[in-house]
Length: 276
Image 1 (cartoon, rainbow, N blue to C red):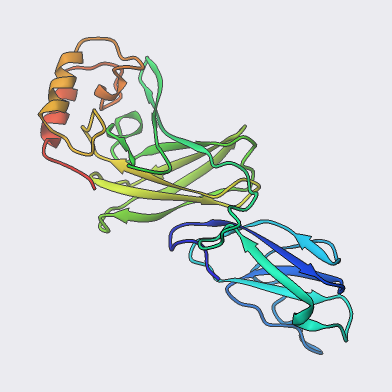
Image 2: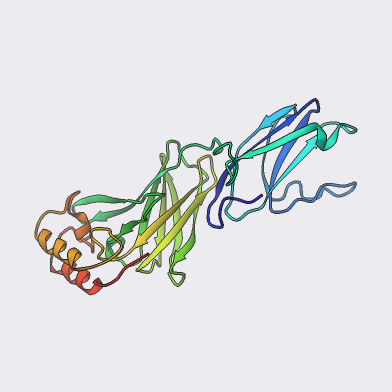
């Protein structure tokens, strides 16, 4: 069995039931070599989790990394029992299993966050499904290609990690250079992010649900429609010299704290650009 797609982590929950035999279920990633006399095999390698107790039924949950083969080992507590005919195994949380998602908690919400000098912090929502949200500002502090993504959970994401899973188009660049936990937030720093792409950010690990966040990067796409055109230029011109606030902040594309001729020039230079 594999996780749901090449870039998607999955929250898997095996349930193993036995008619009479006490059993222990253990999950491994990709490979497993059983122990033999004088050889421990790989029982401590690629370990994902186990049912913790020996009994006639056990259920547990864990994050299965993207593009990973799931191996489940069912161990009988005593020799000479019924073997495979004596138990049944079901895994929920993977594609094609009608029992539904595994109980790993709700998905986070995600935003692209930037500080606009002297004005405040403003966030662009990044939906996990449907069309990707678009970051139209050039970068943190006006530095191109530097961005902060904040994923907010219902519990602290202690131990969670983040990585860039894909670029569309494939020539796009960008990588994770920092991850920080603050309360219920996982704060991810990106660097070297090229313009005109959809970057896919993947998070997994810890005690929270894994997530995949598609993020559009298109400087000057003030209205977030995946294309820079005369409409974006007109919007920045209409908001020029006005205050930067929750309604107008996307027009402050260089995050200087003001909307002016520099922003208009940036959007004009980006006109004609688009992302999938």
